[in-house]
Length: 94
Image (spheres, rainbow, N blue to C red):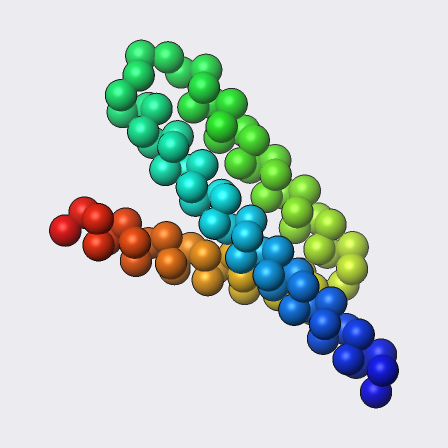
């Protein structure tokens, strides 16, 4: 019983982490699009893109080291953040 409670709390913590990562990921994606559409430089958007991808890969790799359930929780949190970001973008656009 105690082991399953610990695993569930670990998965919940990774889900919250995935939600935070997703929020940061999509905020940086929005900033990257802004830099690409307004500025002549390409170094800043490239650095932001590389940072986004490396950060997400490291986060999910760390979650995978804890097992399948934390990895799934992290990915679920990331997908929830994606849904929120898309809903917000649609409201802003139209």
